[in-house]
Image 1 (cartoon, rainbow, N blue to C red):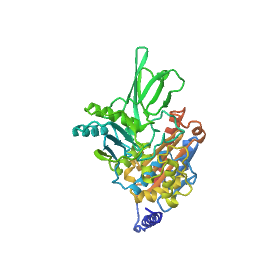
Image 2: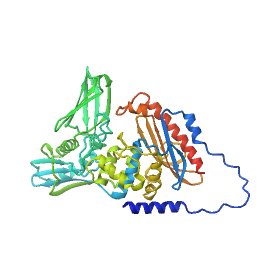
Image 3: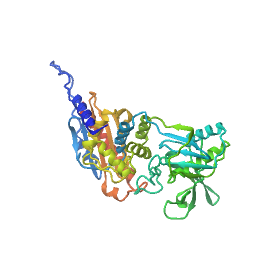
Image 4: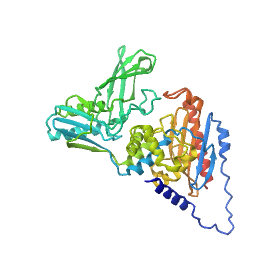
Length: 457
Protein backbone atom coordinates (compact mmCIF):
# COMPACT_ATOMS: atom_id res chain seq x y z
CA UNK A 1 0.00 0.00 0.00
CA UNK A 2 1.49 3.38 -0.93
CA UNK A 3 1.90 6.23 1.51
CA UNK A 4 -0.72 8.23 -0.43
CA UNK A 5 -3.41 5.58 -0.16
CA UNK A 6 -2.57 5.09 3.51
CA UNK A 7 -3.04 8.79 4.18
CA UNK A 8 -6.33 8.65 2.33
CA UNK A 9 -7.42 5.64 4.36
CA UNK A 10 -6.38 7.32 7.58
CA UNK A 11 -8.30 10.45 6.65
CA UNK A 12 -11.42 8.37 5.95
CA UNK A 13 -11.02 6.60 9.30
CA UNK A 14 -10.71 9.86 11.18
CA UNK A 15 -13.65 11.36 9.28
CA UNK A 16 -15.81 8.41 10.26
CA UNK A 17 -14.79 8.81 13.89
CA UNK A 18 -15.69 12.50 13.71
CA UNK A 19 -19.26 11.93 12.45
CA UNK A 20 -21.82 13.49 14.81
CA UNK A 21 -23.83 11.17 17.01
CA UNK A 22 -27.44 11.40 18.07
CA UNK A 23 -28.39 14.50 19.99
CA UNK A 24 -28.95 14.02 23.71
CA UNK A 25 -32.54 13.94 24.96
CA UNK A 26 -34.04 17.08 26.53
CA UNK A 27 -35.94 15.45 29.40
CA UNK A 28 -34.83 15.47 33.03
CA UNK A 29 -32.44 12.65 33.91
CA UNK A 30 -32.97 11.55 37.51
CA UNK A 31 -30.15 9.00 37.49
CA UNK A 32 -27.26 9.68 39.90
CA UNK A 33 -24.48 11.71 38.41
CA UNK A 34 -21.51 9.54 37.35
CA UNK A 35 -18.48 9.60 39.59
CA UNK A 36 -15.59 11.56 38.12
CA UNK A 37 -12.90 9.48 36.42
CA UNK A 38 -9.75 8.94 38.48
CA UNK A 39 -7.04 11.44 37.67
CA UNK A 40 -4.06 9.62 36.09
CA UNK A 41 -1.72 12.09 37.75
CA UNK A 42 -2.95 11.02 41.19
CA UNK A 43 -2.47 7.37 40.24
CA UNK A 44 1.10 8.10 39.14
CA UNK A 45 1.88 9.96 42.35
CA UNK A 46 0.58 7.11 44.51
CA UNK A 47 2.54 4.50 42.55
CA UNK A 48 5.86 6.36 42.99
CA UNK A 49 7.43 4.10 40.36
CA UNK A 50 11.15 4.83 39.98
CA UNK A 51 12.12 6.02 36.52
CA UNK A 52 10.09 7.56 33.72
CA UNK A 53 6.41 7.03 32.88
CA UNK A 54 4.83 8.26 29.64
CA UNK A 55 1.35 7.67 28.31
CA UNK A 56 -1.08 8.71 25.62
CA UNK A 57 -4.80 8.10 25.21
CA UNK A 58 -6.37 9.08 21.90
CA UNK A 59 -9.71 8.48 20.22
CA UNK A 60 -8.19 9.11 16.79
CA UNK A 61 -9.27 12.72 16.69
CA UNK A 62 -7.30 14.25 19.53
CA UNK A 63 -5.34 13.18 22.60
CA UNK A 64 -7.59 12.62 25.60
CA UNK A 65 -4.75 12.24 28.08
CA UNK A 66 -1.03 12.79 27.69
CA UNK A 67 2.04 12.62 29.88
CA UNK A 68 5.44 12.95 28.22
CA UNK A 69 3.66 11.57 25.17
CA UNK A 70 6.20 12.94 22.69
CA UNK A 71 9.29 11.50 24.43
CA UNK A 72 10.88 8.66 22.37
CA UNK A 73 11.33 5.56 24.55
CA UNK A 74 12.21 1.90 24.02
CA UNK A 75 9.01 0.20 22.74
CA UNK A 76 10.08 -3.34 23.74
CA UNK A 77 7.61 -5.90 22.39
CA UNK A 78 4.86 -3.38 21.70
CA UNK A 79 6.91 -3.02 18.48
CA UNK A 80 5.36 -6.33 17.40
CA UNK A 81 2.02 -4.53 16.94
CA UNK A 82 3.62 -2.40 14.22
CA UNK A 83 5.28 -5.46 12.69
CA UNK A 84 1.94 -7.26 12.61
CA UNK A 85 0.36 -4.39 10.68
CA UNK A 86 3.32 -4.19 8.29
CA UNK A 87 3.24 -7.92 7.51
CA UNK A 88 -0.54 -8.03 7.09
CA UNK A 89 -0.44 -5.10 4.69
CA UNK A 90 2.59 -6.22 2.65
CA UNK A 91 2.07 -10.00 2.61
CA UNK A 92 -1.67 -10.43 3.19
CA UNK A 93 -3.41 -12.54 5.87
CA UNK A 94 -3.41 -15.70 3.70
CA UNK A 95 0.37 -15.78 3.10
CA UNK A 96 2.09 -19.07 4.04
CA UNK A 97 5.74 -20.14 4.32
CA UNK A 98 6.69 -23.42 2.63
CA UNK A 99 9.39 -25.92 3.61
CA UNK A 100 10.23 -28.27 0.73
CA UNK A 101 12.24 -31.39 0.11
CA UNK A 102 13.71 -31.25 -3.41
CA UNK A 103 15.53 -33.87 -5.45
CA UNK A 104 18.13 -32.56 -7.89
CA UNK A 105 19.86 -35.54 -9.51
CA UNK A 106 21.71 -37.40 -6.80
CA UNK A 107 21.25 -34.55 -4.28
CA UNK A 108 18.44 -34.18 -1.75
CA UNK A 109 17.81 -30.64 -0.48
CA UNK A 110 15.84 -29.58 2.57
CA UNK A 111 14.82 -26.08 1.51
CA UNK A 112 13.69 -23.71 4.23
CA UNK A 113 11.13 -21.11 3.27
CA UNK A 114 11.32 -18.99 6.41
CA UNK A 115 8.54 -20.81 8.29
CA UNK A 116 8.91 -19.37 11.83
CA UNK A 117 6.89 -22.14 13.51
CA UNK A 118 8.36 -25.22 11.81
CA UNK A 119 8.75 -27.99 14.41
CA UNK A 120 10.49 -31.34 14.68
CA UNK A 121 7.06 -32.96 14.27
CA UNK A 122 6.65 -31.15 10.94
CA UNK A 123 10.04 -32.45 9.78
CA UNK A 124 8.99 -35.94 10.89
CA UNK A 125 5.98 -35.77 8.59
CA UNK A 126 8.22 -34.73 5.70
CA UNK A 127 10.54 -37.63 6.50
CA UNK A 128 7.60 -40.03 6.49
CA UNK A 129 6.44 -38.75 3.10
CA UNK A 130 9.89 -39.48 1.69
CA UNK A 131 10.01 -42.93 3.26
CA UNK A 132 6.60 -43.79 1.81
CA UNK A 133 7.88 -42.91 -1.67
CA UNK A 134 10.61 -45.56 -1.41
CA UNK A 135 12.96 -43.02 -2.97
CA UNK A 136 16.55 -44.10 -3.60
CA UNK A 137 19.04 -42.76 -1.02
CA UNK A 138 20.87 -39.69 -2.35
CA UNK A 139 24.64 -39.39 -2.49
CA UNK A 140 24.50 -35.82 -1.17
CA UNK A 141 22.20 -34.10 1.33
CA UNK A 142 22.06 -30.30 1.62
CA UNK A 143 20.09 -27.70 3.57
CA UNK A 144 19.22 -24.34 2.04
CA UNK A 145 18.54 -21.37 4.34
CA UNK A 146 18.80 -18.51 1.84
CA UNK A 147 15.11 -17.62 1.65
CA UNK A 148 15.88 -14.99 4.32
CA UNK A 149 19.08 -13.27 5.42
CA UNK A 150 21.21 -15.31 7.83
CA UNK A 151 21.78 -13.40 11.07
CA UNK A 152 23.82 -14.76 13.97
CA UNK A 153 21.40 -13.29 16.51
CA UNK A 154 18.66 -10.69 16.79
CA UNK A 155 20.36 -8.27 19.21
CA UNK A 156 24.08 -8.52 19.87
CA UNK A 157 23.82 -6.79 23.26
CA UNK A 158 21.91 -9.78 24.67
CA UNK A 159 23.69 -12.70 26.37
CA UNK A 160 24.57 -15.69 24.19
CA UNK A 161 22.46 -18.17 26.15
CA UNK A 162 19.10 -16.34 26.05
CA UNK A 163 16.63 -18.47 24.04
CA UNK A 164 14.66 -15.46 22.81
CA UNK A 165 17.73 -14.15 20.95
CA UNK A 166 18.53 -16.95 18.46
CA UNK A 167 19.95 -16.89 14.96
CA UNK A 168 17.62 -15.98 12.10
CA UNK A 169 17.65 -17.56 8.64
CA UNK A 170 15.36 -19.08 6.05
CA UNK A 171 15.67 -22.43 7.86
CA UNK A 172 14.07 -22.26 11.29
CA UNK A 173 13.37 -25.24 13.56
CA UNK A 174 11.65 -25.10 16.95
CA UNK A 175 12.04 -21.28 16.94
CA UNK A 176 15.78 -21.99 16.53
CA UNK A 177 15.98 -23.35 20.04
CA UNK A 178 17.25 -26.64 21.47
CA UNK A 179 16.22 -28.25 24.76
CA UNK A 180 18.94 -28.86 27.35
CA UNK A 181 18.25 -31.19 30.26
CA UNK A 182 20.55 -32.38 33.06
CA UNK A 183 20.54 -34.61 36.13
CA UNK A 184 23.16 -35.59 38.67
CA UNK A 185 24.51 -39.11 38.18
CA UNK A 186 26.97 -40.06 40.90
CA UNK A 187 29.42 -37.22 41.40
CA UNK A 188 28.80 -35.54 38.05
CA UNK A 189 26.01 -34.69 35.60
CA UNK A 190 24.40 -36.32 32.60
CA UNK A 191 23.26 -33.82 29.97
CA UNK A 192 20.88 -34.25 27.03
CA UNK A 193 20.38 -31.94 24.05
CA UNK A 194 17.15 -32.54 22.13
CA UNK A 195 15.16 -31.05 19.26
CA UNK A 196 12.08 -31.32 21.43
CA UNK A 197 8.53 -31.26 20.04
CA UNK A 198 5.17 -32.75 21.07
CA UNK A 199 5.64 -36.19 19.48
CA UNK A 200 9.29 -36.31 18.37
CA UNK A 201 12.34 -35.27 20.39
CA UNK A 202 15.46 -36.68 18.71
CA UNK A 203 18.93 -35.96 19.98
CA UNK A 204 20.58 -32.93 18.36
CA UNK A 205 23.95 -34.39 17.40
CA UNK A 206 25.28 -31.09 16.05
CA UNK A 207 25.01 -29.45 19.49
CA UNK A 208 26.87 -30.66 22.57
CA UNK A 209 26.74 -29.57 26.21
CA UNK A 210 28.86 -30.51 29.20
CA UNK A 211 29.34 -29.30 32.80
CA UNK A 212 32.10 -26.82 33.56
CA UNK A 213 33.76 -25.13 36.52
CA UNK A 214 33.74 -21.59 35.13
CA UNK A 215 32.27 -18.54 36.85
CA UNK A 216 29.84 -17.64 34.06
CA UNK A 217 26.55 -19.51 33.88
CA UNK A 218 27.28 -20.67 30.30
CA UNK A 219 30.11 -20.61 27.82
CA UNK A 220 29.56 -21.01 24.09
CA UNK A 221 31.55 -21.49 20.90
CA UNK A 222 30.99 -23.04 17.49
CA UNK A 223 32.89 -24.18 14.46
CA UNK A 224 31.57 -24.75 10.94
CA UNK A 225 29.28 -27.68 11.73
CA UNK A 226 28.94 -27.96 15.52
CA UNK A 227 27.94 -25.88 18.54
CA UNK A 228 29.46 -26.33 22.02
CA UNK A 229 27.94 -25.28 25.36
CA UNK A 230 29.24 -25.68 28.88
CA UNK A 231 27.07 -25.15 31.97
CA UNK A 232 28.43 -24.09 35.36
CA UNK A 233 28.18 -27.01 37.79
CA UNK A 234 27.59 -24.56 40.63
CA UNK A 235 24.24 -23.51 39.09
CA UNK A 236 22.86 -26.91 38.10
CA UNK A 237 21.46 -28.35 41.35
CA UNK A 238 20.30 -31.97 41.20
CA UNK A 239 18.43 -31.67 37.90
CA UNK A 240 16.92 -29.13 35.58
CA UNK A 241 16.25 -28.04 32.02
CA UNK A 242 16.01 -24.97 29.83
CA UNK A 243 15.95 -23.90 26.18
CA UNK A 244 19.09 -22.62 24.51
CA UNK A 245 19.32 -20.63 21.26
CA UNK A 246 20.61 -22.23 18.06
CA UNK A 247 23.30 -20.31 16.15
CA UNK A 248 23.74 -22.72 13.19
CA UNK A 249 20.12 -23.24 12.13
CA UNK A 250 20.75 -24.98 8.80
CA UNK A 251 23.16 -27.47 10.40
CA UNK A 252 20.71 -28.10 13.25
CA UNK A 253 17.75 -28.72 10.93
CA UNK A 254 19.81 -30.99 8.66
CA UNK A 255 21.06 -32.99 11.63
CA UNK A 256 17.52 -33.50 12.96
CA UNK A 257 16.06 -34.34 9.54
CA UNK A 258 18.81 -36.90 8.92
CA UNK A 259 17.93 -38.61 12.23
CA UNK A 260 14.20 -38.60 11.46
CA UNK A 261 14.76 -40.09 8.00
CA UNK A 262 17.11 -42.77 9.33
CA UNK A 263 14.46 -43.82 11.86
CA UNK A 264 12.12 -44.40 8.90
CA UNK A 265 14.58 -46.42 6.86
CA UNK A 266 15.98 -43.67 4.63
CA UNK A 267 19.70 -43.14 5.16
CA UNK A 268 20.97 -39.66 4.26
CA UNK A 269 24.60 -38.51 4.07
CA UNK A 270 25.87 -35.90 6.51
CA UNK A 271 24.22 -32.55 5.73
CA UNK A 272 26.02 -29.60 4.21
CA UNK A 273 24.75 -26.04 3.74
CA UNK A 274 23.67 -25.16 0.18
CA UNK A 275 25.00 -21.88 -1.18
CA UNK A 276 22.47 -21.36 -3.97
CA UNK A 277 18.71 -21.63 -4.34
CA UNK A 278 17.72 -25.25 -5.08
CA UNK A 279 16.25 -26.52 -8.32
CA UNK A 280 14.69 -29.86 -9.11
CA UNK A 281 11.63 -31.95 -8.31
CA UNK A 282 9.67 -31.17 -5.15
CA UNK A 283 9.12 -34.48 -3.38
CA UNK A 284 7.44 -33.25 -0.20
CA UNK A 285 6.23 -29.94 1.19
CA UNK A 286 4.99 -28.52 4.49
CA UNK A 287 3.13 -25.19 4.62
CA UNK A 288 2.90 -22.96 7.67
CA UNK A 289 -0.43 -21.73 9.04
CA UNK A 290 -1.69 -18.56 7.31
CA UNK A 291 -0.12 -15.27 8.26
CA UNK A 292 -3.18 -14.18 10.23
CA UNK A 293 -2.62 -17.11 12.63
CA UNK A 294 1.12 -16.49 12.81
CA UNK A 295 0.45 -12.85 13.72
CA UNK A 296 -2.12 -13.73 16.36
CA UNK A 297 0.22 -16.23 18.03
CA UNK A 298 3.18 -13.85 17.77
CA UNK A 299 1.21 -11.16 19.57
CA UNK A 300 -0.01 -13.58 22.22
CA UNK A 301 3.30 -15.32 22.97
CA UNK A 302 5.61 -12.45 21.92
CA UNK A 303 7.92 -14.66 19.85
CA UNK A 304 10.86 -12.56 18.69
CA UNK A 305 11.94 -14.78 15.81
CA UNK A 306 8.44 -14.73 14.31
CA UNK A 307 8.45 -10.95 14.37
CA UNK A 308 11.84 -10.74 12.68
CA UNK A 309 10.87 -13.28 10.01
CA UNK A 310 7.61 -11.48 9.20
CA UNK A 311 9.35 -8.13 8.98
CA UNK A 312 12.23 -9.41 6.84
CA UNK A 313 9.84 -11.23 4.51
CA UNK A 314 7.67 -8.12 4.17
CA UNK A 315 10.59 -5.79 3.42
CA UNK A 316 12.88 -8.03 1.38
CA UNK A 317 15.83 -6.22 3.01
CA UNK A 318 19.21 -7.85 3.63
CA UNK A 319 19.56 -7.08 7.34
CA UNK A 320 17.50 -5.99 10.32
CA UNK A 321 18.39 -2.27 10.39
CA UNK A 322 17.47 -1.87 6.70
CA UNK A 323 14.31 -3.91 7.18
CA UNK A 324 13.23 -1.90 10.22
CA UNK A 325 13.86 1.34 8.32
CA UNK A 326 11.68 0.04 5.46
CA UNK A 327 8.92 -0.58 7.99
CA UNK A 328 9.29 2.97 9.34
CA UNK A 329 9.05 4.40 5.83
CA UNK A 330 5.94 2.30 5.24
CA UNK A 331 4.32 4.25 8.05
CA UNK A 332 4.72 7.47 6.07
CA UNK A 333 4.22 10.57 8.19
CA UNK A 334 3.31 8.43 11.20
CA UNK A 335 6.90 7.20 11.32
CA UNK A 336 8.49 10.62 11.62
CA UNK A 337 10.60 11.09 14.73
CA UNK A 338 10.90 7.42 15.59
CA UNK A 339 13.89 5.10 15.26
CA UNK A 340 13.36 1.41 14.50
CA UNK A 341 16.20 -1.11 14.68
CA UNK A 342 14.37 -4.44 14.39
CA UNK A 343 10.86 -5.92 14.24
CA UNK A 344 10.59 -7.55 17.68
CA UNK A 345 11.58 -4.69 19.98
CA UNK A 346 14.48 -6.68 21.45
CA UNK A 347 17.09 -4.20 20.23
CA UNK A 348 18.20 -1.47 22.58
CA UNK A 349 18.32 1.03 19.70
CA UNK A 350 14.60 1.46 18.86
CA UNK A 351 12.69 4.51 20.10
CA UNK A 352 8.99 5.38 19.75
CA UNK A 353 6.88 7.88 21.68
CA UNK A 354 3.64 6.90 23.37
CA UNK A 355 1.64 9.34 21.26
CA UNK A 356 3.21 8.04 18.04
CA UNK A 357 2.15 4.53 19.03
CA UNK A 358 -1.47 5.63 19.54
CA UNK A 359 -1.46 7.36 16.14
CA UNK A 360 -0.42 4.07 14.51
CA UNK A 361 -3.04 2.12 16.45
CA UNK A 362 -5.72 4.70 15.55
CA UNK A 363 -4.78 4.69 11.84
CA UNK A 364 -3.36 1.49 10.29
CA UNK A 365 -4.36 -0.45 13.42
CA UNK A 366 -8.04 0.21 12.87
CA UNK A 367 -7.76 -0.02 9.11
CA UNK A 368 -6.24 -3.51 9.33
CA UNK A 369 -8.44 -4.59 12.27
CA UNK A 370 -5.61 -5.26 14.72
CA UNK A 371 -7.72 -5.33 17.89
CA UNK A 372 -9.08 -8.93 17.54
CA UNK A 373 -5.50 -10.22 17.12
CA UNK A 374 -4.31 -8.68 20.38
CA UNK A 375 -4.60 -10.39 23.73
CA UNK A 376 -7.76 -9.54 25.66
CA UNK A 377 -7.11 -7.85 29.01
CA UNK A 378 -3.50 -9.04 29.46
CA UNK A 379 -3.24 -7.45 32.92
CA UNK A 380 -6.59 -8.93 34.06
CA UNK A 381 -8.05 -5.55 35.00
CA UNK A 382 -11.63 -6.49 34.15
CA UNK A 383 -11.76 -3.61 31.67
CA UNK A 384 -12.56 -4.03 27.98
CA UNK A 385 -8.95 -4.01 26.77
CA UNK A 386 -7.05 -5.57 23.86
CA UNK A 387 -3.33 -4.90 24.09
CA UNK A 388 0.29 -5.96 23.57
CA UNK A 389 2.72 -6.01 26.45
CA UNK A 390 6.40 -5.16 26.11
CA UNK A 391 9.04 -6.13 28.66
CA UNK A 392 12.81 -5.69 28.87
CA UNK A 393 14.96 -5.26 31.96
CA UNK A 394 13.47 -2.21 33.72
CA UNK A 395 11.17 -1.52 30.76
CA UNK A 396 7.47 -2.37 30.99
CA UNK A 397 5.06 -1.18 28.30
CA UNK A 398 1.47 -1.72 27.24
CA UNK A 399 -0.27 -0.52 24.07
CA UNK A 400 -3.61 -1.28 22.48
CA UNK A 401 -7.28 -0.36 22.76
CA UNK A 402 -9.55 0.33 25.74
CA UNK A 403 -13.34 0.67 25.68
CA UNK A 404 -15.42 2.57 28.22
CA UNK A 405 -18.84 1.64 29.64
CA UNK A 406 -20.52 3.67 26.89
CA UNK A 407 -18.84 1.61 24.18
CA UNK A 408 -16.52 4.42 23.17
CA UNK A 409 -13.07 3.10 22.28
CA UNK A 410 -9.64 4.74 22.28
CA UNK A 411 -6.07 3.76 21.53
CA UNK A 412 -3.57 3.98 24.36
CA UNK A 413 0.12 3.45 25.09
CA UNK A 414 1.79 3.37 28.52
CA UNK A 415 5.60 3.28 28.55
CA UNK A 416 7.50 2.78 31.83
CA UNK A 417 11.30 2.69 32.10
CA UNK A 418 14.03 3.12 34.70
CA UNK A 419 16.85 4.30 32.40
CA UNK A 420 19.63 4.17 35.01
CA UNK A 421 19.00 0.57 36.02
CA UNK A 422 18.21 -0.36 32.42
CA UNK A 423 21.64 0.83 31.31
CA UNK A 424 23.43 -1.43 33.80
CA UNK A 425 21.35 -4.56 33.15
CA UNK A 426 21.10 -4.85 29.35
CA UNK A 427 21.56 -8.46 28.30
CA UNK A 428 21.24 -9.93 31.81
CA UNK A 429 18.65 -12.62 32.40
CA UNK A 430 17.18 -11.60 35.79
CA UNK A 431 19.02 -8.61 37.30
CA UNK A 432 18.43 -7.72 40.94
CA UNK A 433 15.22 -5.81 41.51
CA UNK A 434 13.73 -6.26 38.06
CA UNK A 435 10.88 -8.57 39.13
CA UNK A 436 9.69 -6.17 41.85
CA UNK A 437 9.98 -3.13 39.59
CA UNK A 438 8.13 -4.83 36.73
CA UNK A 439 5.32 -5.93 39.05
CA UNK A 440 4.94 -2.36 40.28
CA UNK A 441 4.92 -1.03 36.70
CA UNK A 442 2.18 -3.45 35.71
CA UNK A 443 0.14 -2.41 38.74
CA UNK A 444 0.45 1.21 37.65
CA UNK A 445 -0.59 0.30 34.11
CA UNK A 446 -3.65 -1.56 35.40
CA UNK A 447 -4.74 1.45 37.47
CA UNK A 448 -4.20 3.79 34.53
CA UNK A 449 -6.32 1.55 32.30
CA UNK A 450 -9.14 1.74 34.82
CA UNK A 451 -8.90 5.54 34.72
CA UNK A 452 -8.78 5.53 30.90
CA UNK A 453 -11.91 3.37 30.71
CA UNK A 454 -13.73 5.72 33.09
CA UNK A 455 -12.63 8.66 30.93
CA UNK A 456 -14.49 7.04 28.02
CA UNK A 457 -17.80 6.68 29.88
